[in-house]
Length: 314
Image (tube, rainbow, N blue to C red; front, side, top):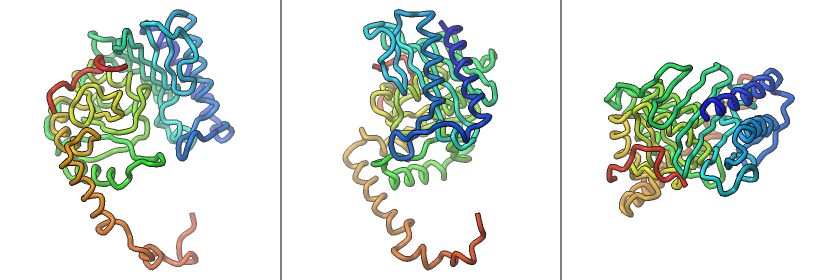
């Protein structure tokens, strides 16, 4: 099954690479503010689904663009597909995006493929058999100190996202780490945690196709995955925290108060911090205009249940 998923991912990657040669001509539509889909997403998804269902016509499909309209509705085998994770990067020519494919068997992810077509990097994992990058075994970082660690995340971009809350999260994390990065493709972020390129990753608002494959890669590489409070059933909760075990353990106490499942006291303190941000960080009315140069002068231009992507997927 893994080989079929690899074949599907490479077929999708070929479509993406051809389109990237003339990205300006790609047709783009907007699902909501700052959330885009292209004809390349659809073509990539079609190629993946055709490859998978040709080999396994009795399997189910859960895909970002087409949902579950293809494949068997009641199958114990469900392919979870993100045909182009990082669409916004792609349409800007920013080469950080990937194809993500996972197979869940009776609700537990057992196969995972993440393919980066710009670098021809292939990440794979099979439950109980380890994680690999380009056929070489990978493991999470050996770093144990958060202050020495590189952490990746995603920024809020949808209507209703709590921007001020995220500023506080970033402030809490940044001052304790070697650096915070926002590449813009959650599946690839998780693959990089698995490979030890970064020590951890966190983000909210993610869907199952964003994290299904990557979560198996991380756990098979020796890492932990859960929500912000350390609970393993994160996919239903749209909070994802992943990392090397010691780093994961240090991030949970920092992020747990920002979880939707935090205590009432923690939530109150977070709200107060967000209110204070209005005064401490955000410019007062007219301040930005006063400080800006005239246009002519400006240059032109919890309990330990964390650890398995195989728990609580559906």
